[in-house]
Image (cartoon, rainbow, N blue to C red; front, side, top):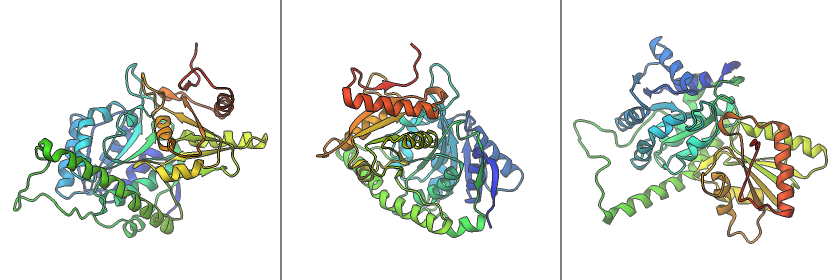
Length: 391
């Protein structure tokens, strides 16, 4: 029987990756994800995990090694953060295009410059179009659960795609929380052995990732897009199967106190739990407010989002990344695009905040909600609002 234990979230992710019987870990240390791969190295060195641990010279090399191991039929895991994700950027496209289900934890971190080791979403937002399934989690339990689900999602023969599990750097990665880590036998009942259908073998040599002239390149990219979109139903099925076995259910868009809400706040990641307390506080004061959270970032949950905001007047989107020189936050931009053609839609107000690890308190989210409602009533000269900036 699985027990609830107090453990750092990074270590819990390592423990559950090991319990999923990974065959290969290729890794390079970078704050704030280092504890994940460091603990996996300990497990291998101590004989607790029978896996090949590959210490590489960079994140680019880490992802390249992962491609080779998955292509040979090995269950593969890695982790990175911030600049590390950007250094492996070009290889991320290869993993998805070649349908190699690498599983990766990303301890989201601000991207330089100036140098910051603290968390925001600028790293993953720069990688939003790489063709991976991308999931956001809010606490340690969700990080553990979705790491397990990620293996089953990516390795499903109808999917065969890499999966990125995003957990906020420091605000989540280094927090000690009470977490239920399923027993290995429970995980094995849920997660079948990895069975890659087209493994490389010297007795049957094949070419992978060949040169594509213009006459076929568009078809190849369209096939990749169709495959990612088709993964949606499998993702939903696997989340339901996980919930049926473990009692914890996940959805692409999750709601909190949305019944009868005239104003909704939209968040992603660990700040969502603080935002819940702000909603509670404003509800006690008679405000008709609620919260929605996007868990599944790719493939984007268009219909679930549209359903969640139906009937609300104002939607306030809180981004932890900024599209420099553009319309503000990348999440707000995509939300506006997703709602654009609806005959009845809320007014979308974008906020950017929490950059470089700066906290946003309960009072801060209350202020964001109230300011967003004021903008909805009277307008603003700005394309978006920046929260907490010192003049």
